[in-house]
Length: 109
Image 1 (tube, rainbow, N blue to C red):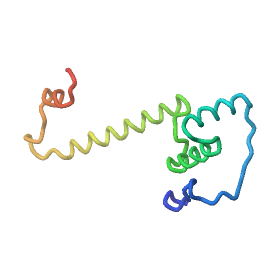
Image 2: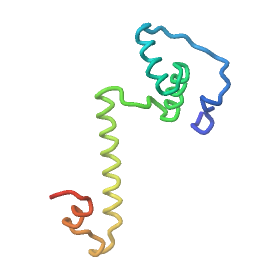
Image 3: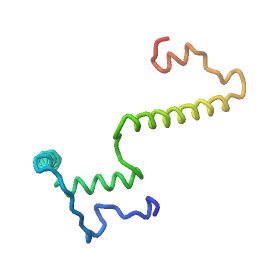
């Protein structure tokens, strides 16, 4: 089912339930955190589920392995942008001098 066909958790009929085991102290602390944000535990779990559906995965970083994946993904995107830049150059006048680029980026050489 594509993202566009997935019902929004906040609007979907709530006719199913699930149970989970959690340490009572952790549950109490989580409820306090969510209450500070105007949410119940159930609403917070529903938001987590919606964000997971939106991201088609977990909506946050879980481990160092995930950090490496995100770094590789960012590098792939950066390389793609650099390649697009190279392909956009038609004449020598299209090039930006290195010193000008550092200045535009606000970075010292």
